[in-house]
Image (cartoon, rainbow, N blue to C red; front, side, top):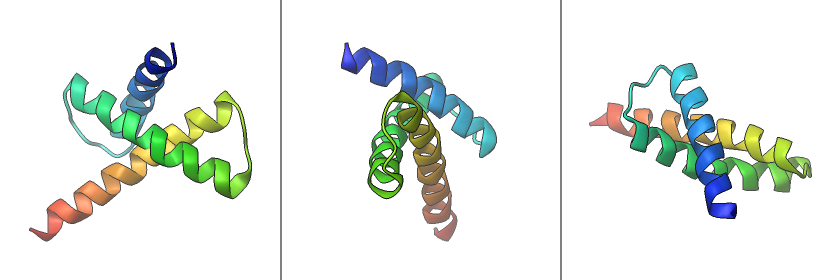
Length: 79
């Protein structure tokens, strides 16, 4: 069940993050961005802000996905 939850939250977070950051991706890339963002953002928010529960996980997922997109654009822009 946790894997299914991560995919659902990742899809939602990736969708929101790609729309906010104006990035056009396919469904698989959006879900992967959201899942990686969930890992990054969830850990950062839990350690820095001491938030717990699903709210911290979802907010962290969106913020982490946006951070991942920003870093990807910055690295891709240097080439």
